[in-house]
Amino acid sequence: MDSIAGFIIPLLVVLWWWHVRSLKRMLASRERILSNTQVSQNDLEKQLEQRSHRLDELLSAIHEPVLRVDRAGHVMSANDAGMRLFAIRDMNLLPEPMVVFYRNPDWLEAFSKAVHSLPEVVALPEIFIGEEVYLPRLAGLGEGQGLLLCLDVTAQYRLQEQRKTFVADLMHDLKTPLTSLLGYARSIEAFADDAALRQEAVSVIAQEALHVNSLLDALLSVEQIEYNASEQGVCDVVEVCKKVWQALQPEMAEKDVTLSLQLPESFEIAMHESDCFRVLMNVASNAVHYTAEDSALDCSLDMTQGAGILSVLDEGDGIPEKDLPHVTERFYRVDAVRTRGGHGLGLAIVKETLDRDGGRLQLENRESNGLCVMITLPLSNHSAAT
Image (cartoon, rainbow, N blue to C red):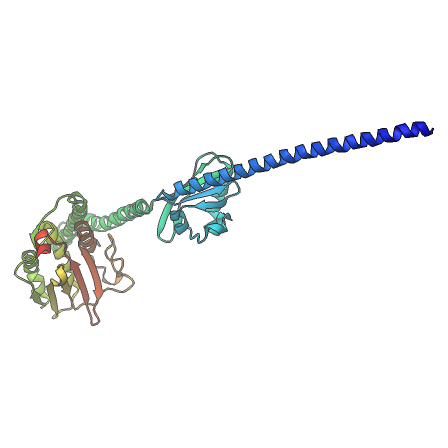
């Protein structure tokens, strides 16, 4: 028994030693594999981080706002335009849910559905931030990510809204005089023997026809603003101004309005004479129409600091402050002075013509009663040089 034990015990020791050695070798091999895997993982993470940085650098070159999002709808990064638009102050705080940056429930619901549809390209509803409008599109970016590109469509949106308003207001402005024309025409047809009614109907029909003609002239003027955009003209604003006030003399005499003119001998500006006449006539006729009876108008041209500013001051009621920013919009009319003769296009024509030619229109209520209209004139090369 002792001889058997003496043989088995050393054998067990040898087997144990061999087993431990095998385990150590296996452990060392696994550690090397783990180490290599860790190195590979670190290299892969560095590559992914580098790619993310390169992608973010590429996105920073895009002028439109761009966000990089994951499949959970979290914002992972943004270019400079995206950070400004969505008020992202610190990129280190990302990722954050989209709801942190834009909180429209309906839009977020559509965004969530679009994220789950990646990599399919999805057009999302408009984003309204302040006075700006953006059209977002979500596209896939590799595995589990997407790009949210926001196109600025503010100008197109405003133009579309203006066109809708323009058509609606035009229909309203045409419907009223046409209804009146039709009504009085039927009155003449039904009561042709009534001389007094015929005279009244003819007078009203003539007035309404003049109103429609005036409206059509204004609409043609609006169209000509864009048509003449590429044609540069030159005229003497002093001569045009004198013609305008001369044409308004009968209306001024009827209201017993006096005029004070403070103009130089001549001043050349970069506008067509017809456009300049239209601008000044709209401003001057408004001044005559809304100034009080037995009052004074003041028209002067200031040429200080190399610029020309034509000012027209009246002594009327002015414009309510709430309406002042809007009176240059097409068809906008102040309710308190909404007379049947107006069409709400005069000041819009003035502003759009001046904007096109490089001028500016400014309206201010005077501390006393009345309105001050200041027109910054687009200077010609000759006037700018002098």
